[in-house]
Image (cartoon, rainbow, N blue to C red; front, side, top):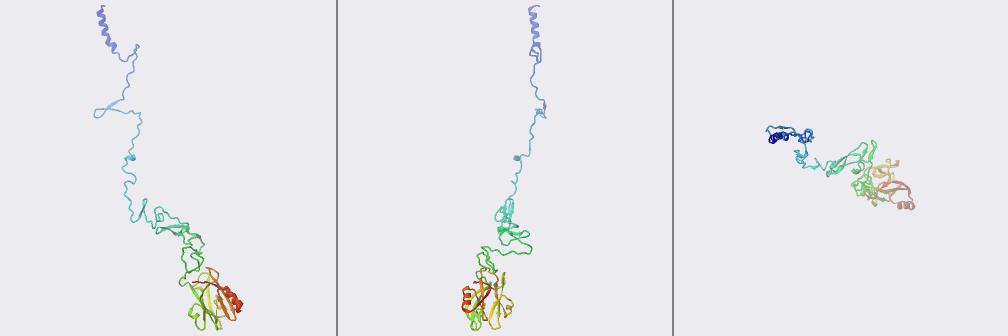
Length: 315
């Protein structure tokens, strides 16, 4: 073969050897190719769309996010209008009568052993629990007394309580019914007569009548009306025309009953004074003075009998 013929044959064989894709070694093993792309499809416009990898866990998209909510709680509610009441939170209340908001919002009334009330913006007592009573009229301690059926409250003093004509120290000052309460106590005048002895009367004109000479106007005071611990103090006319005074409604079966002079205490209460009773030769004598009592016994022959009762030195 000539040299030209050989070269032509070699050149003709070169394209077959150069186009052998997939072989990178002399053994002829296929070489790895590039990674295949995910399958593609064609959308309605003809544009190729890449399908997402089916193995990827994408989080779901929430449509309830707070930021996308059309309203915020209460934000779009109309404002609460309470006039003439008062707005307390989300309620309209009357601060003058609401025990849960008494005087101010949030001031809740609690009354021991009773239902709570609110009066003029101040906590007050409603109704006591069964068997309990408010005897001292103090809402702070509620219904403080437990009483049996039919049992009544006793009187309780308070420093700011006004005095009443009740034979009780209402204002805790140690005295009862002081201050000249109208019609509460009546003054008893003392006068004497050389023929009729001593006279004790609430009538000043009578004390100066006939041959009576006044010794002391308003000598002591009695209660005008009945009261706790008080009994009538009767005026009695003896056959000799003289008088004596006693708690006996029959005048001790020794005289004629003229009627009550007033009402006297049987026990020392509310700062009273003992009224001493003496007797001598058909004549009774009464005094609130221990010194005068002792002098009458020592100097004038009187016999001390007893304390007739307890009286008061002022109206």
